[in-house]
Image: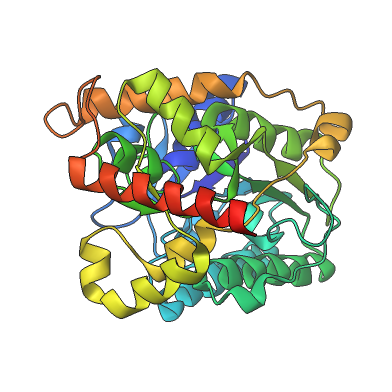
Length: 354
């Protein structure tokens, strides 16, 4: 029986994909790194291969006998250095897919990201797969690396590898052991977001992304990419819903971007300790708003209600960090509420004067 290989299987998306493949009846092999957290793979009937995606000899062993490859490994931290993102996301993807081409892998589903599409620009309220990438000016290493990794995958596809690209948006749900896209929920529940700038994010459930990746394998066109997103939220709306579902009061201070980014730069390493990082603020202020019409129409993808994945994420962190997640009824510290009230009052006064 042909083997299906999953990279990044111990991670958030990869573990959901692994379970979905097992449910489909695939014989699954997974790559893990030394020191990987394996709790997401506990009890699963998979073959584990220790593999560094930059080591070609290890990749050849992992790819032996593989017919399908789901590439779910990657680095998502906005705080990581450009060099780290380049090594993991760009070089790792290129090396893996070059070896997959040599090994004769029949189909590759490359897990890219909404970041490779970029935020909605111009007069468009939402973006789709056809939008030209214009996000390089943001100066976000993660965004640049995901764009280059996807472009590299397409170049290898042009050499004859059967590659389909999936671009999940912000993935919520259970199992984010490496604290990637659900970190915003974790920090909300721990009351560790002292201030924010308003932007827009698109939220999708992890199990819906896994289903979408399998549909990319079954029905996707070679060289095409498919956005996998569900509901668009302003951060005001997202924090309000998280507050309603968890009972924890939303952050009190909303800053204008023009003030927030210089403040984060001025704080430097201290800002990161306080939960204020320049790259996170720049990303937070963007309009990461999307429509997934293509995946729904051509793949038959049908994501469930978005609020369910908010509830699942909250429940998972309450179970995982019961001593650190704030209980229902928790309010923001009085000094922060006072600052927030002052900023809102000043904004209202300025709008009347103008």
